[in-house]
Amino acid sequence: MTVALQQRPDGWQAAFAAMASPCEVLLDVDTRDEAAALGEAVAGEALRLERMLSRYRDDNVIHAINHAAGRPVIVDDETAGLLDLADHCFHLSNGRFDVTAGVLRRLWRFDGSANVPTREAVRALLPLVGWDKVTWRRPELTLPSGMEIDLGGLGKEYAVDRAAQLLALRSSTAALVNFGGDLRALGTRRDGRPWRVGVEAPGAVDAERGAVDLELAQGALATSGDSRRFLLKDGIRYPHILDARTGWPVTRAPRSVTVLADTCLEAGALATLAMLQGAGARAFLAGGGATHWVLD
Image (tube, rainbow, N blue to C red; front, side, top):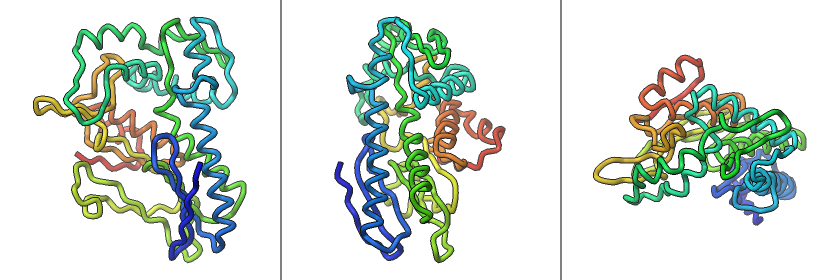
């Protein structure tokens, strides 16, 4: 993995690509050597988790689970923690959030086209969806034959948190970890300033004017929305967030939800769960007391 270093007026940026996203870490350090060491460490952790969680590889725990043909699989503690969260989100969302819904991507490709699948095709896949059909007794998972799990909906946010934890162990420097717009801040910079981040407004032509500017000294932000991944047919916009119970995109949801939380994993889960509520997104977030921004 190539890590590009760039010196900025207030520190260094280490940039790389992982998990199908542009990634960066901003570091309030003086020397190139320190920036390079920390940037390489963050990139290495992102690559490790990409390999661990990718459903496209044949050498990881996800492949072992998805090809077990109904046999139980013992998973490691790290994967077990993510499966515990997946189980919690499934029940909290009344089945809307479901890590077995990845099979629906055989039909849904949110590339901006008008290629909306037929209802018959979606119905034909629904028997392969349903976390309630899975037996999860930590650390043993039994997945019915033909079903799959996909932890991609949690992986990037988890990677942000892991990168932040790694930085905190290696250095006391202030930093901002940003993986594809999901980010976590580690302290104010040496001059006392917080990190300035922007949340892009849906459909904005000018990203500068279309952003909501926020200041962040500690904690995490995650955004869920349909700005870049959608289908458009007959004047109807289909966002990429699928309701696992129906196999269809959520209707009447906001264009974007951003949540502030202590960890990126928590922020990302809340943002996604809110979007899955459709028109009830604001009420869901208000009920939980999370600091949030909703854009229509």
